[in-house]
Length: 93
Image 1 (cartoon, rainbow, N blue to C red):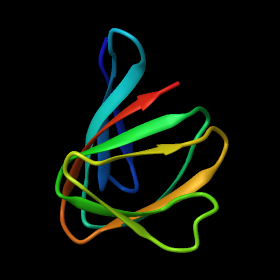
Image 2 (image 1 turned 60 degrees about the vertical axis):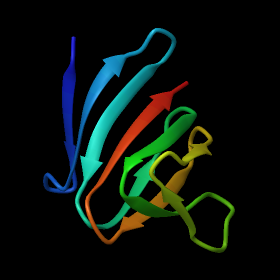
Image 3 (image 1 turned 135 degrees about the vertical axis):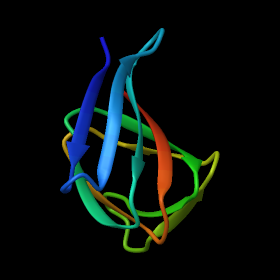
Image 4 (image 1 turned 135 degrees about the horizontal axis):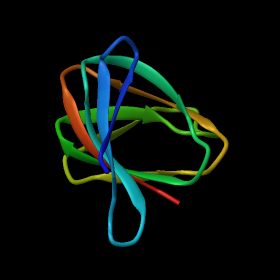
């Protein structure tokens, strides 16, 4: 069963699904800056657009373009920002 998620007053939306191996979401974010918390390991892949991320323990923002991925450990927070809409795919676990 697909589940629709909405965050930050509708500026971030995703659809949750179960892949062959891990739970995942596919979604989109409006231009802006957002902070997320994790409850489990996440691997986020940028599908379209470009996003900057301030990952746990980092002191500088890193840029991720379409096709790039980054990993975030469980039980941490991280920030992302983008100048235009971004589509992403994220796996959990």
